Length: 151
Image (cartoon, rainbow, N blue to C red):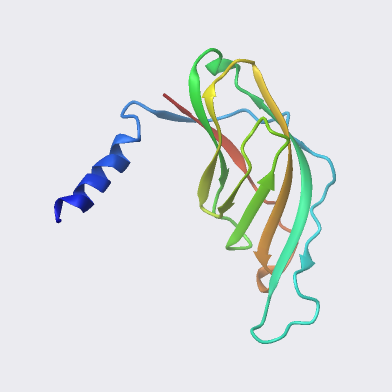
């Protein structure tokens, strides 16, 4: 029974291509439809246990310049770096070109896997951001980025 954890560990490492490279994708064509993101308290009159979470939703038109990877397979991730005002999470739905998902600050989530067939990959995301309202001392810019793992 002891070899099982080792086999699982080997399976995880086998899923990561040895020669994969990660590159930040040019997403300068990505624009929010409605700016800025307005956060609202999840619970108007907090009860025990106290709910200090704030949530806001924004529609974002994503346009990724994937021309450097044309006719090659790749995996695209949405990255939410750790940043001010602290721990946050994001979830999104799409119109189908990219994958819907969820992530928290300091992590990344897969949004596309497959052959790159066009120079630009476009979709519309309905992005929901969730933060601890006690950390909101001022206005903050929330930074996301897209990364390509080449196979």
